[in-house]
Image 1 (spheres, one colour):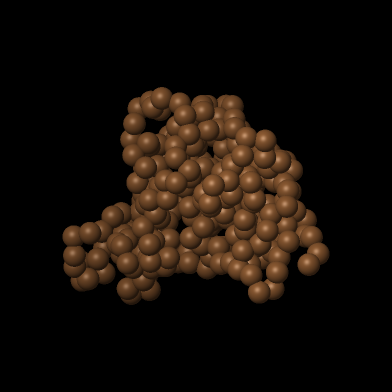
Image 2 (image 1 turned 90 degrees about the vertical axis):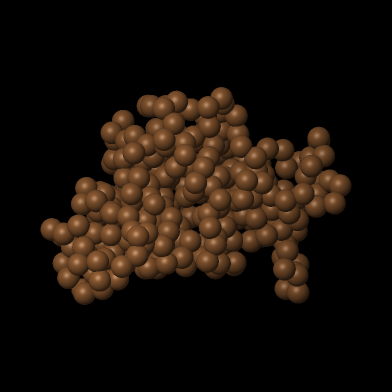
Length: 272
């Protein structure tokens, strides 16, 4: 049983027995794994702060062919997110990202692009915090869009799901449970009150985000209401395909409506 060494991002931890933790972590070379960190909850644990949510680490572990859980041996912290958790909005954003990773990533399936997406957005969140504290909307929107795209669930944003017509110059609408956008005529034909509009500005922004890295979008230009309709659309796409509501999505959008961040402090690791 040789030891494996991988670069990884911690997604979530669960208490196990008196002193152990079950850790869900996303590795660059082996995908999402779950393992047991023995004695990780003890004050003098060798894991230290390396198992905090979305910590970027280098982890050593053993994996038996007949066991679902790996055994974590040690981890070295590459980059923590301690500089983000003091802001409430940024802390909710970290939980949102971790929950989406948990829901979208299949076990033990390598996804190098998704791994690089996580690291790039974490860098953007830190940059936004330095430039404009609490302004996490650029990174959150970019992550949501590319998470759906890399999972193969992003529908065409310029074509009607009903009639196939071009939406470039038309109003576009979406509803829960439908994997795409419809024009005004198809919305009227399909009926039902639960439709939201995805504005042309947000669709254009999505197109730009699919062509450019997140660092090319200035953080100062974003507010909580910027592309809020696009985030709602993407969350509904995730929930439709994952067949599960995202607990952190409503918390994030509630934070977008608040004029100022609540008192500092990270939210519970068990939020979802």
